[in-house]
Image: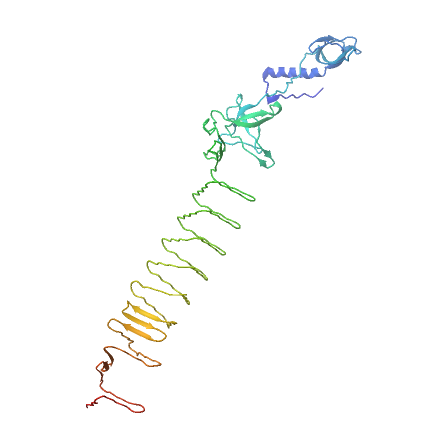
Length: 481
C-alpha cells in the first residue's frame, strides 16, 4: 500500500466528469511506469527510442520478455590506426505495461521583446507597489478584459540609473504602451525596459518641424492638466533650455552657486519676493541702474550705512518727506549749497542753536515782513559795522566809532511808550539839523532853529548847583515879567 500521489498542473485547471477519471488513470499509469523502467548496457548500434527488443538468457528468468526502448545514450571512441568502440545505455519498459510518458513540457523561450499597456484600478492614473513595479496587459491576452488590474504579475521597471537611494525614477502610468523584455527569454522573468509612443499617445512636439526639440514633460495627477517640463531646443541660432514648474520650484545648493549671463537677464515675480543673505552682499553695476517701486519701500540698516556718489545726485519726492534722527547729524558741503522752498519753511530747535558763517551772510525777504521773537534776551555782537537799510531811504549804521541813524523820508522817530528812553554817552552828544530841533514834553518845549532858541513852559527853572550862571549876549538881554 502506498500513499496517494498528488500532481499539480500549471494555471490550476480543473477536469470535470469522465475527463477527470481518464486523466487520473493516465497519470497513475505514468507513475506506475516509472517503477518498471530498467536500464541496461549494450553494443547495439541500431538501438533507438521507440524500438522493441527481446531479452533472453537473463540471470533472472522473469526479465526475459519484450521491452520498449524509451531512451538511448550512446558512447563511442576511436583513435587513428585503431578500430573504434561503441556502447550505449538503454532505458526500457516491459511491453506488458502501457506506455504513458510523463507530462513534461520544455520551458518556452520568448525570443524577443513584447509591447503591452500598463493597467491599474479604475479611476487611478498611477498604479504601483512598494518596489516600483507595474502591471501590464499584452495585446494577445484574451483571458483578461482591457484595463484589468490583474492582467499580469508585477513587473520590474528598468531605469537609466538605479542605486541605493539615488538614480533616476520614472514610473510608467496607466494607459502607456511599454516594452517588455524577458530575462534569458524566460517568460516568468519579465522586465519593462521602456515606453513607446503610438497613435493615441503621441509626442508633444510637432514633427517633423520640431525635430530639434528634446524634452522631459510630466503630468500632474490626479485628473489635472498641469505639468512640469524641461525642454531642450537644439536648432542652430535658436538654442534654448526651457524649465516649467506647475507650482513650486526649489533649489538647494550646499556650497557655491555661480550664474553667468553673457547678455541680458530678466526676472519677473508676479506676487511677493523675499531674499535672505546670511552674510555679505555686493552688487556691481558698471553702467546705469533704474529702480521703480509703485508702493512703499522700507529699508532697515542695523549697523552703519555709507553711501558714496562720485558725480551728481538728484532726489525727487512728489509728496512729503520726513527725516528722523535719534542722535546726531552732520552735514558737510565742500562747495555751494542752494535750498529752494516754494511755500513755508519752519525750523524748530528745542535746545540751543549755533550758526557760524565763515565769510558773508546775506538774507533777503522778497515780500512781506520779517519777524523775530525772543522769549528772553537777544544779543548781537558785531566786530565791525551793522547797517540797517530800508530801500536807501532810512539807514541805521553802527560802527566801532559812531552810530548813525539817517532818514531821507519824513524823519526819524524813536518811540518807547510808556517808559523812558535813556541816552548815556561817555563823551559828548551832538544832534545836528539844517532846519531845527524840538524837544517837547507835554506843554513844555525847547525849540532850536537857525534864527534862535525858544523855551516855553508853565515854569522855567535855571539852577546852577555850583559855580556861577553866565548869560552872555552880543547886544541886550530882555527879561519880561
